[in-house]
Image (cartoon, one colour):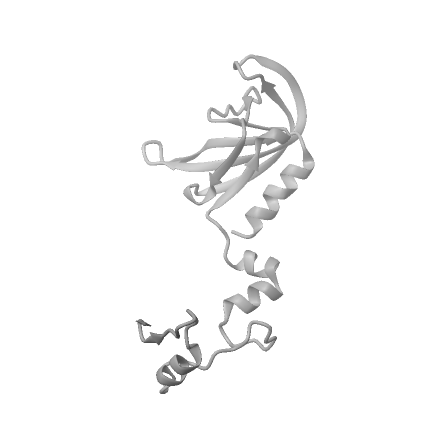
Amino acid sequence: MELCGLQSSSNGHTDVQEWHHRTSGGSLPPKRKRSDLTHMPGDRCDRASAFPAQEAAKNPSRFVRIDGQRGVYYSESWEPNGSTLYLPVCGTVLANIHKYEQISFEQGCFCIGDDTGGFRQRVQGQALHCWRYSKDVRKLFIALSYFFTNGDVFQEVLSSLECL
């Protein structure tokens, strides 16, 4: 039995060695063993396994993961006088940061609300503001703002932004 140039013996095993000799007429590079630790230039698989953190930093996603279960709030109607009401982020959000022209940060006391949109309390934390440009008014405005009451979550988001 022959499948795509591979010959199969009566016991069901394919004769790979014969196939390799027939196809290695200079068109295919020689195979390396997976355990080979020498790195070929431009070989992403070897770099990724040796240095996964550096490879992830070089190939970032267009999205930043924001975990709402850990004290994250958002607002799509930011007010400059400090009266912005931030609502809880439900679940995990993948924020496309590339669609904004500018990102800024602010630290201070902010108003947070509950799931129904009612005021709950003022809380100390850090905010991340995502700015867009309005062609009508010819100005930047804060289109989306995230507020973090948990400093560790804020640092995780900052680390993700550094990779962009």
